[in-house]
Length: 133
Image 1: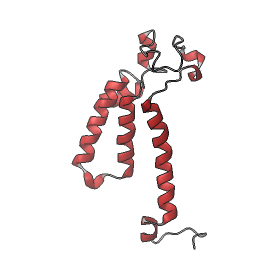
Image 2: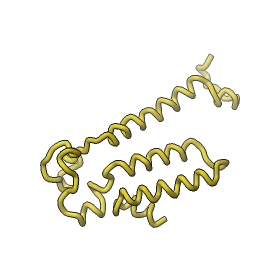
Image 3: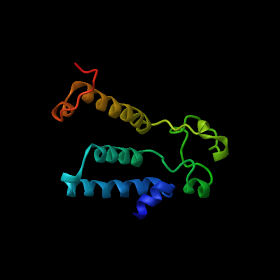
Image 4: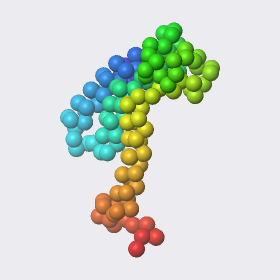
């Protein structure tokens, strides 16, 4: 619970994300009957949180840390880190992890929509929309 609070507040966010991801993996593995697709999406998002610099802006760690630890190779520009009053538009972080997260979220929505249009479990439950043939 403490690691989840640290992750929500942004205090050592990457380490907290690793701990919360490990705990969530153990819960999912221990209780397979109580799991659903949301638990797997949460696991994937926590894995992306382990790879992304989540504690860089608008967090307790950012307020106390001072200058940025991100190098110019990972930051879109090598300008100094903006303060929270300058807005998040100046703090663009480009990496493979951010590209993966940007493709993961739409893929989840596409898959959910595709399964609903195709039928699948909706047809087994006897529920169909009025416009469906």
